[in-house]
Length: 317
Ligand SMILES: Nc1ncnc2c1ncn2[C@@H]1O[C@H](COP(=O)(O)OP(=O)(O)OP(=O)(O)O)[C@@H](O)[C@H]1O
Ligand SMILES: [Mg+2]
Image (cartoon, rainbow, N blue to C red; front, top):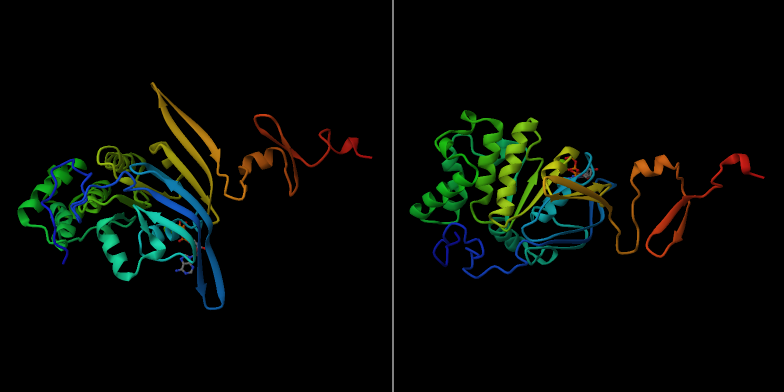
């Protein structure tokens, strides 16, 4: 059992690593994926779930990864969470080189560096324990004294605004409340990174907004890096940055900024290391682009034209 080497930090002192007692570096929650590849082998068949995925998430940022079913979201989460290993490429999370870790390193990594929130509340919470007991479990496993544990549980219930539900079991709470307790439980050991796979998949719009509110406080107030993986494009309204994943590769990003009362969203395409970028499907359709396009370098932009006479077939011959 891991013993704390230093006293538990006070509320808000998230810049101290409670496992080592050392000050956390600013890189503490940074995620970097560089050409990540994952190939699953099923009998004689190979499924390429990630094909050269690039991603950078800064420490304390909250980012949604949005993609259709089968695009590779859970595969990415399993690799970043130390539950699975990549076939090729590199990944670093909070200063850990994921490809250099052995099984023992991964156990420590999952306990201290990563917090998980899953779609199914049954995977997040034990049904026969109350909210406060559930949050207490990871702290007890880590060998934390009862007094410190109880203070920490109070603090976490406050973070997710559920102090009034502390003695309720999961079946005595709404779906949204259960997921907020799940977030509190995931935050118990002060992870640098919170990974959430479809955390609001079973909730209605209003309730999922409440869960996102709690995830935002984890990111803004506690400085935890939050990565949410979802198929729901509407989630981009809840986060500052949305990264689209398609066929195991990041393809585009939307960045939202508050300008006074207005929220301005900018769309970007992701340019990979060898210069490839994916055009949005609606652009391709609008100009009926097909296979070859003409490129022209202008002083401040690049023009992309369909490879045919602009007036169409009438001018041919
Ligand atoms: N253990 C596995 N063995 C074989 N193939 C797998 C395995 N896990 C995932 N895959 C395949 O890898 C691809 C990516 O799957 P993944 O679960 O990462 O997608 P996802 O984006 O999470 O989808 P969903 O939204 O349905 O959860 C899919 O083609 C899937 O069938
Ligand atoms: Mg999935």
